[in-house]
Image 1 (tube, rainbow, N blue to C red):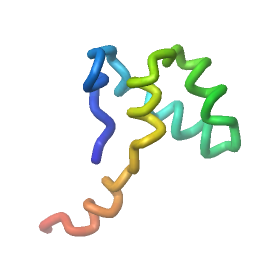
Image 2 (tube, helix red, strand yellow):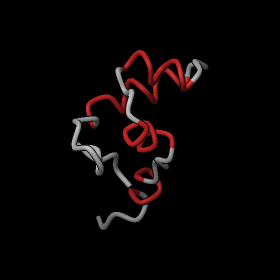
Image 3 (cartoon, rainbow, N blue to C red):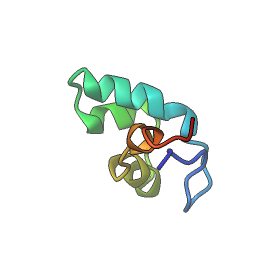
Length: 65
């Protein structure tokens, strides 16, 4: 699944924040602190990030030539 452009519940644009979130958490920062600094305060938006599983690389393996 690709991160949605907007939160499903409240409609806030969140898609542009995914790359920075993924990079910073990958570097070892606490996800709570990263979400706070990105301005994601609503629980619905935070759940979109915390519950997201990036399966795009797996799906890309099966692309037709």
